[in-house]
Image: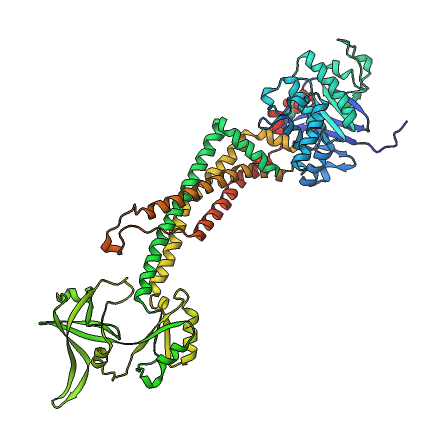
Length: 244
Length: 381
Ligand SMILES: Nc1ncnc2c1ncn2[C@@H]1O[C@H](COP(=O)(O)OP(=O)(O)O)[C@@H](O)[C@H]1O
Ligand SMILES: [Mg+2]
């Protein structure tokens, strides 16, 4: 069945390489992808295969050498810097391997930052930030600075920040990569459920088959583009359940 | 505003951060000192200039009305009366001005003299008395260039007068001038009992003599010339204005150099927070918004430094002036200590220029920082 709804993300024939002349390295080519509302997609592949680079292209942070990316119908390449930033703020949430919280801001302020940048009044921003912090179980730490939080807590704050504006597309780059196994499991479960509630669709990049296996769709990134992988190719290791 | 919110947090945090903290503190102190120096120097200059102007105004008639040609005014011309009717005129008095020889023993020297109604006796300028060795109380002979007819033919008009006093050198506006009673001057210059070479006019509003000058000129027609005190002292008035500008420009250089430290602050901040800049753009900040954050940080230091400097400068000027802490040789300026006068407009202009410059200086590195591609920083962190 073909979905009636317009795709959130369309990527067609993407190619990207770095450097020029002798030192030029082609990372991937011919990457095409359609993401529909409700999708939970894992992109996996060995370290250095270009997963982060691909997410940057999806978020309009970098430009492809070939092909095009459109988010919610808008082609990144056609947008001037200001509307491009506005679309990214409203349409994309980003979770990194490292939390990338601003150390000078409290947890609450970090979560409210996307709202502040969008021009929301301070009171509104703080209130919505506290709601989301409550959702990730950190309301009690709203006034804490990142340096006083544990690794897992920081990553939960980062997740809250990524979904505070209810983005169409949530992009996660090795979101549990910096955590130990126990925390990683908790954070991953939280991420998956929060994504379902507050984001249109989510792409989770990981080189760890354990997490890839829990996503509805799994794609493998190689030099020749994305290929489908059957979930059965990723046997459960530690008994985590699938989130769909 | 989010940019000021973030900039404030950065600067507060910078107290704990060596790189940013040191540069920001240097920028803050440098700017504060520059601004304070500017305020104090301008206050000193304004003090001196006020002093010089008030002395000028006390020595110089606000308007001088003279015949346009070489003629002489007489009562029948009703010039004095017509000037007095012009609005804004407080007083009008006739004067008789000319050149004579002052002779003392065997020596003689030429001298400018002016006769005024109120003058009693002969008052020489020290510059006129010194070459002839004249001291108050001595009697001198004044020899006019005009002559009268005698049975022996034309002989010069002379007058023998006692020197009643010496006037200190004037503010340096023009040649030294001796003064003597009007009637004596009329006799020396053969002006007749009611002649005058000009009228000295004093105004209600001495600071703006132009309007009254125009009104007097209009009332009297083209046969007279009207000059204001500013025109009579054109060179000095111009010099005062130029002095102000030159001082401002010279001392503002300090502020400009200090402002460059703000550029450094903004650059160091941008360099240490490249990762933050990248995160901000991921969260939807446009390059312009990122630029604003770093510019606000540099500019914020500039605003703080400017206000601190203004406060120090104004306080220093009041203390130095109020307690007379800068002594001066009295005979040189006619003042015991340096006068300070804080002009609100000066303070305002210094403040505005310093703040504007701060933001300009901080803008350049902020723009550079905002143009760095976010992906580079994201990969680096
Ligand atoms: N700016 C760059 N210049 C040169 N090579 C780069 C640059 N950015 C990424 N690369 C290279 O591109 C490849 C893919 O990087 P990345 O997308 O981070 O991979 P992954 O996230 O899958 O580990 C790596 O080999 C990396 O070294
Ligand atoms: Mg990566």
